[in-house]
Length: 164
Image 1 (cartoon, one colour):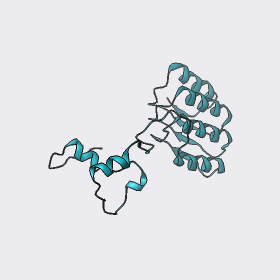
Image 2 (cartoon, helix red, strand yellow; image 1 turned 120 degrees about the vertical axis):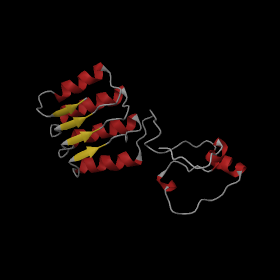
Image 3 (cartoon, helix red, strand yellow; image 1 turned 30 degrees about the vertical axis):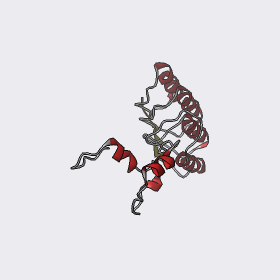
Image 4 (cartoon, helix red, strand yellow; image 1 turned 180 degrees about the vertical axis):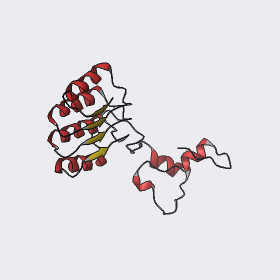
């Protein structure tokens, strides 16, 4: 989301005053002024770390997804919305593995994630094992017809909600 300012700013000013993309950035503490040189040194080589803005196809699992996976494995969740939360193939694979052992989740939304082919196939495999899931929303993920068919085959036999 962009917020308009009453004064136009140069792109240079906006980058000098930007926050790093992490939950630590959302604080009530006053901003520290950095010189141009110090700012460039501090930010050099850094990438955004927010799961919502940076897609990484590496297999690393984000801390947020690790926490959710632990809750899935412990059976503490009955519904889960992962809209725009899966930032890597590793995140998707971790959720798929947890679904294989979960027996309490009945609703799952994993839409708007651009899930990789490997991730979709892992979800399809998990659906073959997990029979307690009665609702699945997996739309807006650029899933090919082949992957859609894999999900449909894994979902077959259920008289419940599937939204591709």
